[in-house]
Length: 104
Image 1 (cartoon, one colour):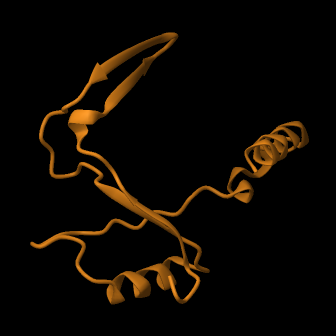
Image 2 (image 1 turned 180 degrees about the vertical axis):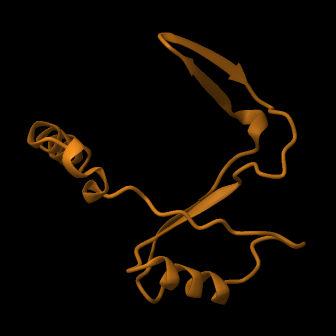
């Protein structure tokens, strides 16, 4: 936080308080939690702004263990507009910019 890298970091309630929505064509099926036990259930997230995956790895190496026992932190980049290449038409880009402006 002091370095200005961290943009957000929240914990998530247990899956018992959640819902899942499964998509199958036009159908939507809602399932109430709790969900079957899994070792890969997301419990929270940190959103960082860094220049590269290597920089993110270096920050994770410096952070405290988020659990009292052995744990893992998965690092995943967010999609950027540039990641969509030619598929992002000028019309879609304009729509995205309007939506972001509405959010702000």
